[in-house]
Structures are given as structure tokens and as C-alpha cells.
Image 1 (cartoon, protein in one colour):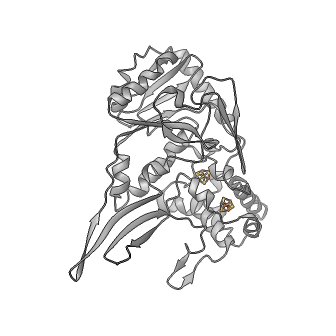
Image 2 (cartoon, helix red, strand yellow):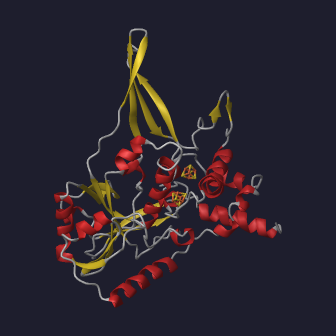
Image 3 (tube, rainbow, N blue to C red):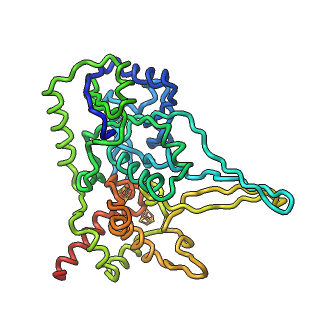
Length: 375
Ligand code: SF4
Ligand code: SF4
């Protein structure tokens, strides 16, 4: 929510939900939301309400993802898929500039994206927290990235509050969810017969005027708070943030890194699905005549063998080095670097790790043995 905006709430009847899509389209937005694709849920175009994965629910646990049929008619019963918000603002691959050789010199032409206005419907609290971290990295540092900004500035974000946690969720312990409190234009809580709609920005308030909202009884808002609190309480995983960053800095030589290195495949899945990982490389693609070259930015991962290769030496030659680097940066050095944790507790790295490595268990073990040693 924009801090200067005064939130208001209203009720949208289920039968009026298509009005939201109509209003967004009238404002010129392309709409995307959760859709079923290839046996999983991915961001996809929403033309009508039939494009939502109605009658499906997700089950996730370390190394496990399944969709299950239900009798429910709700649009947002699936919590989230492998894709976070990240690919919508930080493209997995994009051309940054084109270099063209002319007489004895060359010309560099930046290729800035010109995206259409995009409304994203169904964003969860953890992904809004991930987006805020990406904003900090790409927009609020000494250099604002124009490629990221071009996409970011055209977004209209509609959050959906979580009232069901997955086995892999631990956002409550990271202070990022399950209730979205900032970073959206509108937020919805889905009930059986209707939606509670909250405005989070002036743009959101303007759009809400087209929705024929009804007043919300205060008792209903209290009930929804209770539902979200119950969702937080149902989370079985957590990270004890009070022990960080020290527990990781003190664990540099801990034997647990050997144990996790025996299990980790260095497949990079955890970094690809993570909403906050921002490592990337730059690739040069010259034509056969070496007269023209495209320079592209491509997602990279600290788990690849050459990510740690710097000037003739690989600083992280083993999987043990790479996993330790990833976890220590994510949960410790990130705090020193950006003043916040690099983990928002979405649980995707647990689900999409093919061998089910669970960072909450790895951290727990490091904290436990630190406490046992009395430090
Ligand atoms: S480290 Fe894992 S749980 Fe934390 S934000 Fe990244 S993917 Fe989500
Ligand atoms: S997803 Fe799992 S196996 Fe793959 S690099 Fe990450 S921790 Fe290792």
C-alpha cells in the first residue's frame, strides 16, 4: 500500500467479479493471473474468469508439487506456482543494447523495453515482499536500472490475501505475510459469495469506483483478520531471525555444509524460483561478420561452476562453497548489505529443489549446534 494512501474497503459480489476485469481492460491493461499450464500454475493471460484455475488446489512440500481436483468454485485456491513476481520485472533474458561497427569505431544503441500496461491479479504477500526487495536492488541503489523501471512503472498490482498456508510456507516468521500490507493497488480476500476489496493506492481507489462495491460490516473485517491470523498460525516451518546473521557467520567451518553438499545437485532451481535472487550475467552475441552484436542480460546463479570464477581463479570451486555462499548471503550478508533479509519465506526453494533440501532445516541445525556449543 502506498504509505500516503488512506485505505478503504468494500464488498464485491462474486457475480460482479468480471467487472474487475472489464474495468482493468477499459483502463488499457493487459491482465495476467494464475493459469493452468503444463500441469502447474503459471502467470498467463486472463480474458475471462474461466481462465482462472477454478476447482484446483496445490500441495507443496520439499521436492514435491501436486495439483489436486476440488469441488471449490473459488478463483484463488492455488497459493502459488514456481514463478514469483520476478520474471515480470526482471526479465530472464533481455537484450540491453546493440553494437554496430562503423568506420574504425562502433555505435552502441540501448534497447529499452516499451511494455504495455500490465495488471497482475493474484499476487501473494510473499511476492510483494520479494518485489520490494527487487525494487531496492534495481531502483533504489546508486544506479537505477532503466530496463527494470520500464516494466515496474507500468504495473497495476492486485494482491490476494492468503487464508491457507502450504506445508512449505514460513512467511509469518519472516514478517512478510500471510497478509499483504503494502505494495498493492488493490487487495482481495476471497469468500464463498464475495470478495472484500481493499484499496492500496489512488490508482486502486479510482479503479474501485467502477466496481459497485457495497459497504463492509466491521464484523466481516474482524472475521477476515482472524482467518489470516489462523493461516499464519498454521505454518509449521519458521526461521528464528533473532539468531541471524551471527549464526551463519560463525558457521563457516561447520560440518553441516559437507552434509548438504552431498545432497545438493547444484541444479540452480532454488535461485531461479527465488523471488529475490538477482544474479545475472551478460552475454555478447555477435553476427558471423562481426559487424553487429547484441548484448543480453541473462539470469545467472551462484550454483553454477563459473559464477565464482574471477580473473583466473574460481573462488567457489565446490558445491559446498556454493551452497554456503547462497545461504550466508541470503540470510546473513543480505542484512548487512540491504538492511533486510534476502528471504521472504515463500518456500519455493523447498518445493522446487529436486532433492528436497529445506533451508529452514539447515538453519535450524546451524543455530542448534551454535547454542549447544554455548556461543
Ligand atoms: S530463499 Fe527460498 S523461501 Fe526464501 S525467498 Fe528465496 S525461494 Fe523463497
Ligand atoms: S535446488 Fe536443491 S539441489 Fe538444486 S542447487 Fe538448490 S539446493 Fe542444490
